[in-house]
Amino acid sequence: MRFSTVILSGLVLLAGCYGFVTGQYQNTHSDAWLAPPPDMMSAEAAEDKKVYLATRQLEGSERWHQAMLDATLSDEETVQKFLDIGHLRLTDADRRELKRRLEKAQALARSAMSREKDIWRRRRPFIDYGGRTCVVNYKRFVTSWSYPSGHTVRGYTIALILGGMFPDKEKKLLEQAHEFAESRVICGMHWVSDVRAGEQFARKLYETVRRVK
Image 1: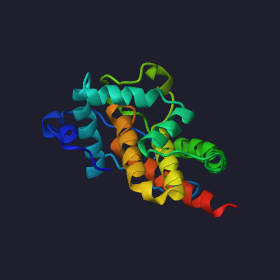
Image 2: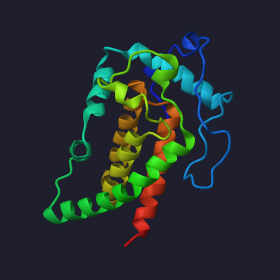
Image 3: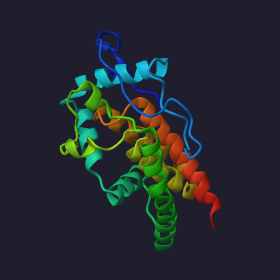
């Protein structure tokens, strides 16, 4: 996942000497859809840490407030956000088809996501490093796992389904999914590698659902 220059600026200065994430992810797992989260000594794990610390500096910014709004959206509101971004006006038949596809994806994702998070048991960045989050009721996330990002799965799944229905809008929709996922890192709820994994999970989910009649 690529982050904008403003988010990545000053990473070296913010590296610091902190502890790192814990979790049960040293090895692959036969029931998992995804590869394990980054090893704590890897370059990707170092990037996770740097980006988390850097994004704490965005508190109070316009982008921070956008991330706060993204965090409050329900499933229905998220779908509407993507429809608005794509300037999509659905017919009744389109709405029925979208509902059908989303329900199929949600039915599969519900159990698969819970299993995936429980396999890896990765803690959220605000727990390991402290710092503010942009989620008001953040305490309810203290006992939930970070990998992969569920909000990212939601955003990319909606974008892929709508992109499949309206191919000319796919690029714009995926750009919105990227921004929606980025909000989770800005909020301090997820590591960069969590949202990368969320995108991978959503693409696997979409391909699986697409094959089911």
